[in-house]
Amino acid sequence: MTSAQLIVIYPPGEDGGRRVRVHDRFVGMAYGLLDIVEFLRLAGLEDVEEEWVRQSGVVEWRGGGPDMWEQ
Image (tube, rainbow, N blue to C red; front, side, top):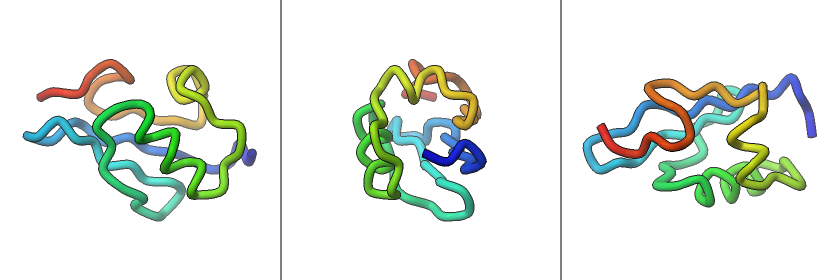
């Protein structure tokens, strides 16, 4: 896993979904931590789990942390 790869989770939209960007590429709309985990695995990041997403320094949470899924 590359620590230089920045992951940005944007604020929740009206439907509760959060845009997920890995480095400079939008990878999907997440509606929970498991969605983010799957997007990161599809982007090539191995051994990613919910707890890693919650605590990792390479994940930037905008508009609330990992428990914020509504506006």
